[in-house]
Length: 281
Image 1 (cartoon, rainbow, N blue to C red):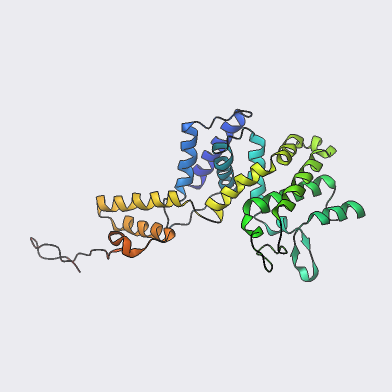
Image 2: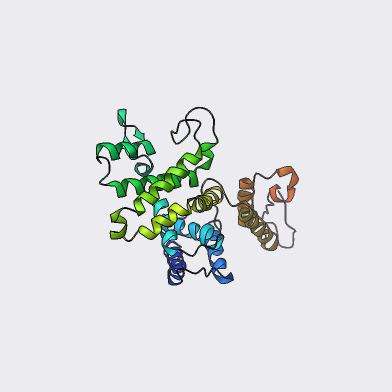
């Protein structure tokens, strides 16, 4: 599945690039996206190994291109790359503090770099773009981190933290990076301007991506998979489908008492003399 999955995602990305500036997410395109996402849940007992970049590209296409009508191929590609990069702790926590403990990147760190000269980053363009990415990643993938009121959160942020701080400074840094001369040299100026102007839109899309596919599960899809497997069990009597249905039900946290047909003990058979009926144990 690994190669086929990556190829199908690349085909979707190619369609997006070919029609850059327009949204061509018609019924057939949407169906392809949904089928690929659904394939993750087909074999619930098997761990699938697929390229993570392809996974993130697919999910960004789903929440941004399909569901929000985005028309910008470059931004979709940028966000897929950003999510892949942030699998590594050093991206979100680029600084090393006392005792080797990694520390997050705050706007005050950027201001300090600008005043004293760049030592942690090569130049303002790199520093500003990195901060913008950090802000978008935090507010997009971990919005729940800003709801806690006491103690240090999982991301090591002080409490309370207002997400508007990261939104406003993230937008400012993307704009700062877009206005740098290196933005023209790297052909990133249009992308960075769009990230600055529409920061909240991309943040909202990443909120959905996080809730449904990273921090949580698409429960509607899980419910469909459970019913499909249970119906196949009823049609075929194959216990594998019943076991899969139970696994999906566990994700949904269904009450066994309310669904006795799903959780009843499987029937077993023993070999008897010819002509004798089945013996149930």
